[in-house]
Length: 208
Image 1 (cartoon, rainbow, N blue to C red):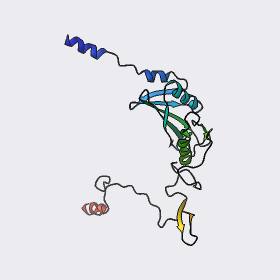
Image 2 (image 1 turned 135 degrees about the vertical axis):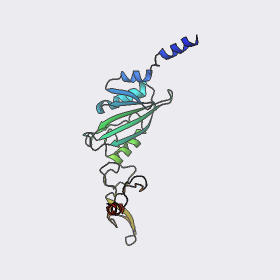
Image 3 (image 1 turned 180 degrees about the horizontal axis):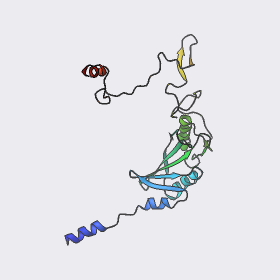
Image 4 (image 1 turned 45 degrees about the horizontal axis):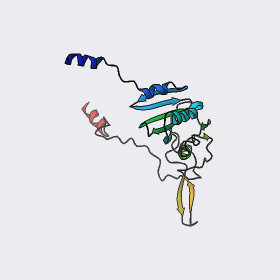
């Protein structure tokens, strides 16, 4: 009897992921589970409709975050990522779309008013614009800031520096002036990352 139970357990089919199968049926959506989380990849033109469907038909009531990712080597270098939460289902879903520097993405602020804050952050840090977003003011950097600091091609030193000018009695902006040449450090430990230490070449030369 015990052997029969073990055989049945081994041959029993895996449980059906009903949520994943339902999302796969949506048009213009590539759905999968990655590391246990639902991930949807959608076309930019269809993204707003998919988000509305997720809210109204799948009970993803809250948008927890909207962020950007920069891949400069791609033609459409940016990914816009929406992290949604369903309180009733105790489920999260990540919606990802691709875009470039010129093409705006449909704003989700009409679906979730709080999305306007996240979209302003994405605009400020990556320069991705949102069609329908009424307020494209910067939200994390200063209004006079040049560029978008989370782009991979943005210089680490920035373009301007802010300091208090004692003569003018005011905070002023100046172009960045480095007191020494900018250097990159690899932070390798000489005991772990390096196979040849300075001076070793002399020892090897003397042995030969």
